[in-house]
Image (cartoon, rainbow, N blue to C red; front, side):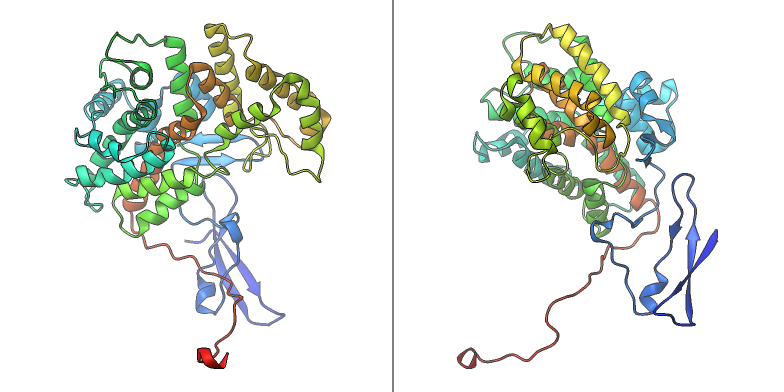
Length: 429
């Protein structure tokens, strides 16, 4: 039942088209434009920035107020009190788990951390200097060749098994991408460790000695996973939903999400922050680059400041800043030139009228890049870690899409090419 009715009059016509309006639990009302197709019209919305392509109960963002909610819970509260795996449960099920439910969920995830042994050989087909994201896209897509016993997307149990497998295996695959690139042996998962501890073990451990995860770094890693877990209908999540609408298997859909995330305008932002810091090179060069950022004629811009969605402070950034301070203090890092540049840029952005007026505050990518570098993770792995984190968001939206009646996505277009014309023989052109 429509909450309200909108009426559209075209070119002064007395005949009006009635369009139903609906209200969600949060956010602006939406106008149902589907009846326009029957009247011979489409809407035009490049980038889909004004179009609600689906109904979802998972995540809500209010960019003007700087609000991010997962099933109603503020991201700040989850980051302070929850864990990544508990947040995974929330995104998948819509409610926080009881103690017993969480224990069972964590136990099931740990039961799926291994990857098929033949996948080790799969990596040998890549060059050693291949970008880890190139490897991840391929390996995630190949999972359907190894785990084809639960690919019936219409079976709720199969969807659940695929979700567990992806949550559990992505850290293993991510660490394998890194180990392969540096010529070190793969580390098998250790299920006695927490999710974040196990990832650090697979990244930095070796067969020669026992790896003991630092609890401060493990907590920081868990927060990075949690803060990137889902972000509503962004480019990669929308891609996963669109791919899923065709009936493609979940591993193929998540691989599509990984590929989309690889774009520098999306998941490559924290890697771009480090590249920018390297370009600046020395703190004494900061004034020059600040001037360039303010110059409308210069294409240079400060990476990690402002956000396309948030017109206020990124709610994840405050938590990430605190975590960043904790990590740097724990590691005793004081003399790193890039971190010094980052700190000075942060102060300028928070105090300079140009940035404050435009609300170009440091965002989550700015701080996460600094944290990952401090931990010892190379910038080429940043987007891989983002993909690992966002997998739960992707698979939650994919599962939500398939849990209710749906149809294949089919965006329309405004055609501006030539009208119909007849073919002319090559000799007569």
